[in-house]
Length: 203
Image 1 (tube, helix red, strand yellow):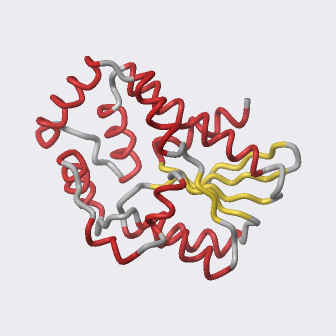
Image 2 (cartoon, rainbow, N blue to C red):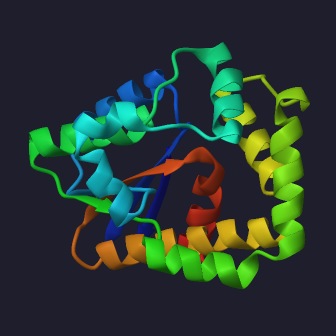
């Protein structure tokens, strides 16, 4: 975990690997142990709303790229969608009466950022990568190294890198705003974005 103190608020960042069932168990355990005043998770408000409707979990269809990610990640254990780290965080927060807050951009903000940052060449390269992703070699030393290597290769173009940086800045800003209301905050953030969020907060 990553800890940072800002203006009297303690922010604890839990980097998590999306998809692994074991990561959901870790998130639940940490929330019970830390007992924060509030929990932030690195999804949008629309995604959190969908997460609350468990009747639609079975309707989710993965993209080709997501299927490759899940297949590679399964080397480390059982994989599920939606990401168990977020589902478990939501469930435990509801059980304990802890506010859970979406940290990421909402759909409108993300669409605007996407249109500003992503060019036609970025989309073409992304499409080409998706077609050959199953044949690409990734660092499978651990779930964390795989997730970060996957992120580097999927977001290798300038536009997609900038888009992810925009997400990190937005999540950091949301956490800082939470710090004005809550003294002890736990942030469950995808491992690929955790360092960037921390660096932005710590500036």
